Amino acid sequence: MAELTLRPNLTNSDDFYAALLEAHDGLEPSEMHALNARLILILANHIGDDEVLESALRAARTSSGHRTNRGEKDEPTL
Amino acid sequence: MVTARYQTAFRLYPYEKVSAQDTGTPARHPVVIVGGGPIGMGLALDLGKKGIACLVLDDHDGVGMGSRAICFAKRTLEICDRLGCGDPMVDKGVVWNLGRVYRQEEEIYSFNLLPEEGHKRPAFINLQQPYFEQFIVEEIRRQQACGAPIEIRGQNRVTGQIQKDDHVLLDIDTPDGPYQIEADYVVACDGANSPIRSMLGLGFEGRTFEDNFLIADIRAKAEFPTERRFWFDPPFNRNETALMHKQPDDVWRLDFQLGWDIDREAELEPDKISKRVAAMIGQDIEFELVWTSIYTFRCCTMKDYRHGRVIFAGDSAHQVSPFGARGANGGMQDVDNLAWKLAAVITGDAPDALLDSYHTERKHAALENIKNSSRSADFLTPRNPAHALFRDAVLDLVKDYEFARPMVNSGRLSTPCTYDPSPLNSADALPDGPSRSRPGSPCSDAALDKGFLLDHLTGDFTLLSINATVPDDANGLKVVRLSTTDAADGSLATRYLGDNPSAVYLIRPDQHVAARWAEYDADAVTAALNKATGKG
Image (cartoon, rainbow over all chains, first blue to last red; front, top):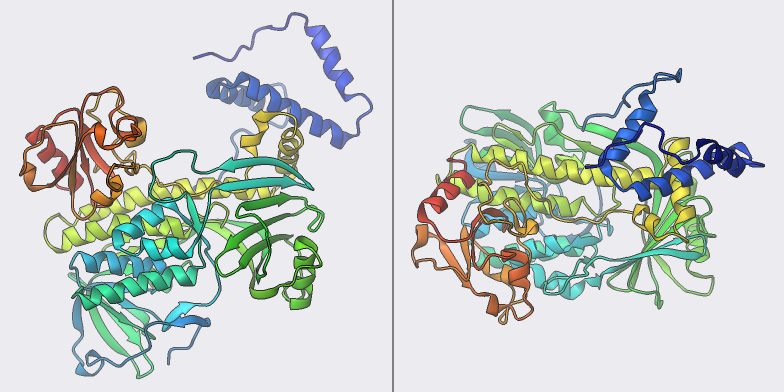
């Protein structure tokens, strides 16, 4: 089973980062959100590995650098 | 006094006074079923056919008005076949397999629910719930005529219950005043607002979804396709969803999402509904409103489906959103699961503990139904901006990119549950056997040269032998002997053998697999049978 890579993995990080910003140029905030949502779905489908995706969700949710770390979501128990 | 809570479509069991009301001494009944809806009547039929005396108490005298549930799944029809009332349902019902999903004016996705051949019954039929209930009651009447010990008492309302050591004492109200009866077991099939559940002070936990839906069942001569058609953001119901589905008698189910903050009274005005309908189906098509209703929904379950001698089945135990047709179909699987267990315990063939497995298996199924039904509801009724964001992103992507199509969720339609964690299952002993037929799973049907497989798997525990050698009196069980040549399409091999040359299956009375092996082994079958009847 593949593991989520959290080491540098892009051929050129600066190029990707610039392309990501460029894709948002001229968009209203709501359009930016929509673009990012589409992008996430496209990338998730490409990855296609439940464990990697779960690790990625966890990594994004729990990274210590962001202030609003809410931890695990409260789901009602059924 | 027994006041009516709703109008009836068919008066099937008018109130008649019985002598037990005058004797003063409560009569004892092995099983009392509270509630005469599809689940209560289905259970009575199943028990009665097994020779178990049961009494149905219903606070009305017939089937409630209104289409309500309309989609009945293949598994439900297979259960009804076993009960003897599948044919009239399929004859009357509208068969459909195809679903289409639209966004605005454009089709974005379609699905075929039965991509596989060799099943006696279609993936779904649409049939108004009153007919479904009527066909069950008609079969009860036929079975009663043949001596099945089923009794139905209309306008008998249960008003109190006390659990004693070896029975439950029920207080009943009738048009002639109150009386009492005793029951070895009580099955509460009294619906989502179950009075029995309230009397026991038991909880019903879950989520309420903040949305209203309008149902308009209309009668119209129209040439719309026999498909489940579902719209996101259609021109006739902007920013909301809508659904169109065919029923028998030229009736069409239309369903309009309305949102949360609505004027309920105003929305139910026939003029306003008629305007909505005309906008949807076209101004030039004549129609009449047959039944209208505004509903909200919850996804809830009880913690335990068994409380001593009181057992809960159907909506009283668990409730789902209507998307996916998992309410009545789930309830009929409760019936399928409970009837043989209750019968085995009452006749002394199995210990009382077998009834605990009803809770284990059907709670597992209910959680699966609630999970699926909640996910559909989240897609249709986004609860926060993130839900809406991703829902819209899926709908944006779906036209150009195939990968997004399976994410569109307008209802994941009911499929039978596999009881993977069940204590009744024996370890799988068929090497690399087909996963779909593993212990706990419902048997897949298969077309044989003569009839269908499921028609052979009725009644008690059965040994199904495919290409194996099983003696005549094997473990005192009914033996069904087949070879792969009995199914010309190869379906027996695909669905039951995999790469094995032969297989022996122990099938429960509800057509679920209890155990399987490559060859017959008397001791292994005995052990599996003990396990499957709560003795192991």
